[in-house]
Length: 145
Image 1 (tube, rainbow, N blue to C red):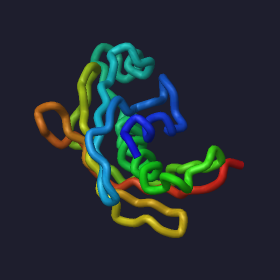
Image 2 (cartoon, rainbow, N blue to C red):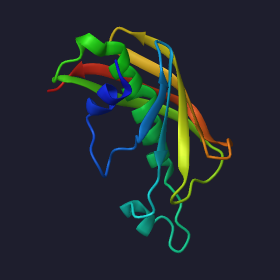
Image 3 (cartoon, helix red, strand yellow):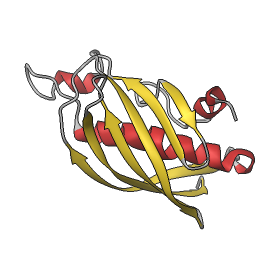
């Protein structure tokens, strides 16, 4: 499966799409990038005069790249229009702030994929190569209700 095929199957669109490109994918890992455009709505109020990317958005970015894109790759021919990869849990550590116009890279390693469940260790790094957050994301594969 090609990177563009994975991106085309993502169930998101702007302004809630947090994947620009995929760099690598195999049975056990994935990496991809996203640049946080300064015009994204959440920067208007988080925080006044000193915009910072909310942790929930960083978590969502890691889940989209590190869990959903990897899940799409792993499901490949089993993926149907009714298939949903639902985010179920996250355990995150936030180490540095991410500011408007910063490009980040997400790296994920699969730790569990069976019985309709997927779990991955994820790390997000800034362009300087510093870890900005890391943790575990998990989800389940189900049919759209």
